[in-house]
Amino acid sequence: MRILGDSSEDELVFEFLAAELDSRLFREGVGNCLKLVGARRSLLQVPNFGNPTSNVLRKRVLSCYRGYGRNDLLFRGFPADAKWVLVEVNMDELGGFYYAKPMTGSPYPTVHGSFVTARNMPRRCARVKTSGRTSPASRSA
Image 1 (cartoon, rainbow, N blue to C red):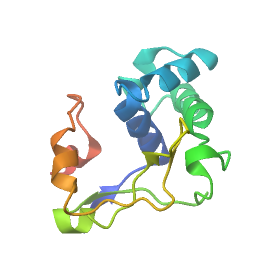
Image 2 (tube, rainbow, N blue to C red; image 1 turned 30 degrees about the vertical axis):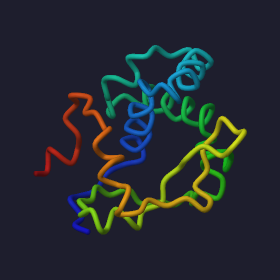
Image 3 (tube, rainbow, N blue to C red; image 1 turned 180 degrees about the vertical axis):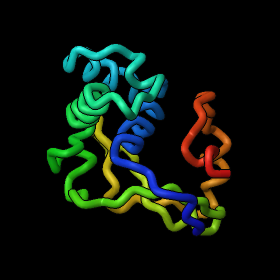
Image 4 (cartoon, rainbow, N blue to C red; image 1 turned 180 degrees about the horizontal axis):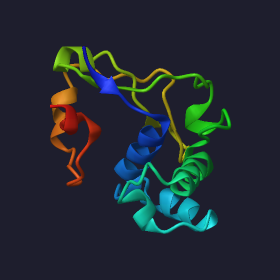
């Protein structure tokens, strides 16, 4: 694994929500929470990390939608003091990463007992679409 540079909690929150904004599985939940906090879809389409109000609203959406900052749902047991960095990994390294998947009968994913294998990762990565945003990782490259 190669560390490309530092990131921030605000970038994590934005990228997490932006990745699920257009997902067939998750877009309804994200949309409902955007409405609940009084935010528009554009909050998750154009990052403005220098705007504290936008950063707080995005954290509220992720809290509503996934339990972020409340030790609930997907983020149950998540460390409060995480340090965010951008990394580059190869396929073998990626195979050891944990990921979330829906539990049977639950609309919320869990990371308990789920992990990515190097064998199934290329298939999963082939379905990933880029959003056209300039990611922090591409700025470092």
